[in-house]
Length: 90
Image 1 (cartoon, rainbow, N blue to C red):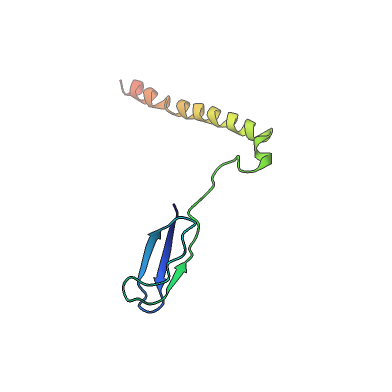
Image 2: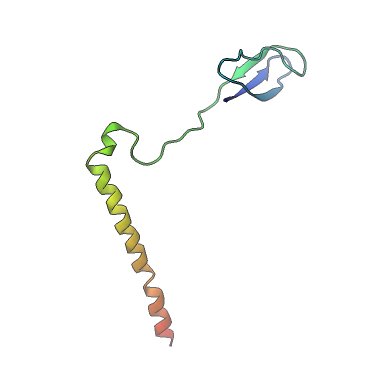
């Protein structure tokens, strides 16, 4: 069930209410009995990465995913100088 934010036009009391889609909006402030106004904010959903468009699932997206693990193997080679330093200190 979604959470809606309300603000009173009389006393500026702000609160959130969990309501179903079929319920009517709240109209009376629980603090002072004044009129309520529904507040609208930014959407809390963010899309990251590929795969959100129809064309992302074709051709190039598959090769990008395959190239990322190879860069991960490059990170493992960056750990190999650390043993070389320990052998140099012996």
